[in-house]
Image (cartoon, rainbow, N blue to C red; front, side, top):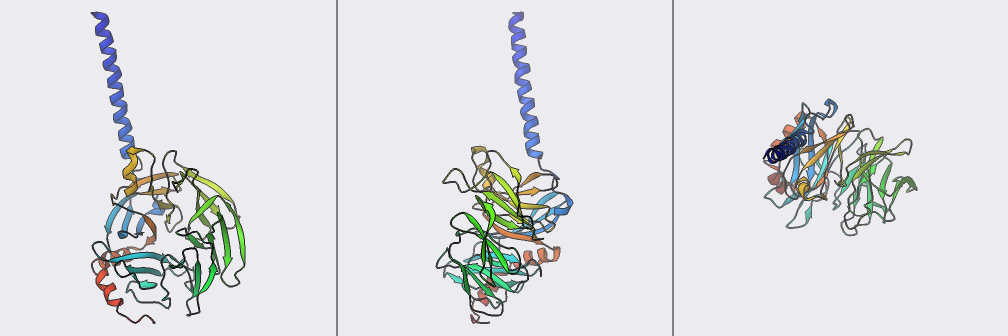
Length: 341
């Protein structure tokens, strides 16, 4: 009887230890990332999800807070892209109607006034000095075009661009894109001179606000999953590629959004490998370069797909949140304007 009692007590201790360990692990998981975002990354952010519009997030005291989202929910309007010129700070976006395939060209925000660029475009990239634009061809997805703000004729600068991949301006004259041979090509928009950058087996992500660092993601090793589990960075000046972070069994999407300080960035996990983490596809993550850790931001938005964005001021955040109420009505009005400025 005593032996049975001791055996039962040992089992109870063992089970109790497992329960306590489980509670501790859950506690660590639930609290992991709290206040891990350093002060350099605090502020307001406008993030684009082309299915749900623009999401406004604030990071204060190291903890993210969802302030508002929508813009296009419940309307036929969508946002194809949103860009901030790196040197001037001005914001541009491309709205379009899904029921009429109407694109309005690039427009300034706020005010949604048409700019000189009136080509029908989808993805686009504003040069740092705001005087040029690179954009995809909606009729031939491997074509990449360039146009100056003075109304010059659009110029085809690449016909081997990988559709839906990121393109970055290295300077106001040079941009880099991923070609269909898996190489990153630098091209001068003035001379069309091309050269291959020392970036092999990586797709390029966002360039830092300072213009000196590009985030990279290794090509997938297991098709058809087009994602990787790690992030690297490319130093524009030295041409060196260095390792940044890796998450075993957890994949990383292709879009990144930098903080203005360059001390961190947003990313997404659109596909995951384990059933327990499926909900991560609806959320965002912020990687803090100072701590070397990532923080999960629970959005819970179905079909969320991070497309781009940037850090904004408090006043710009207030304007965006206010504009969410009138955005579809404003777009209906500007869609009736003459196409030529």
